[in-house]
Image (cartoon, rainbow, N blue to C red):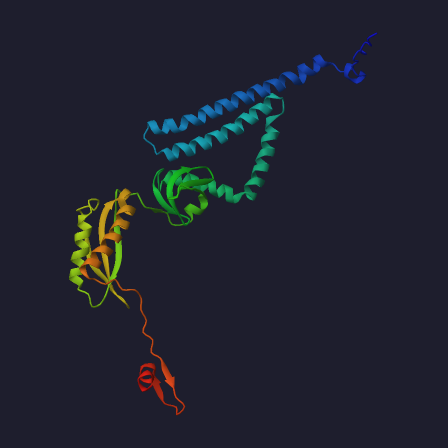
Length: 295
């Protein structure tokens, strides 16, 4: 004969609760708060995503649109959370006062983070660079990918992303390598003192003008920069489009080396003459060459 299962009994303290009153008092406000929170998060995301498109339509730099998107989303989250808490019936005024006091304390503790926000505002307002510009900031060189609330992301030539705090960028010189459409290629190449300067100048100038990427205006030139300790240093200068700068530079370095080799022009390397003196038993001094001849 099969045994029948014992009926499940509800604990007495559960039966004493007025579930209808609990649901009316706490359940409806809690459900309303959840709905407000979900709808608010959806609206915050939609509103923040509108900013890049809106700034693009009026011709504003995309960097500003991305920054405003992050700021609007953060502000909308705060508003949504406050409204959701108010839906629960919690008084908002004391909460705002507590949040203000806590915000002051957190602000003092996170002053560096706040300085990053202020620096981000400066970057998108003053715009020393735009998205896509190649810059040197905080010791790093790369293409600007995005300016966030706290950091700026740049992509280096090795395709690695570098994230730099905004306050480090505004506190140091900012070098924008692509702010202008053209850029000067400047090579410093030494020739020997026994070489013909005019021949070296004409050879380098012909090789520079032969490169189709070199612009005719301003005209390229070759000048004597310095009479150095080991060489006569020539400055070989020309202008190219900013996008062609690196490729033109490395090509000209190779072509000028090959051209100087064909023309018999020497590119010296640092040398040092050493004179060795030997002291004999009689106190006399002989050079190493004299000592070799005597023996």
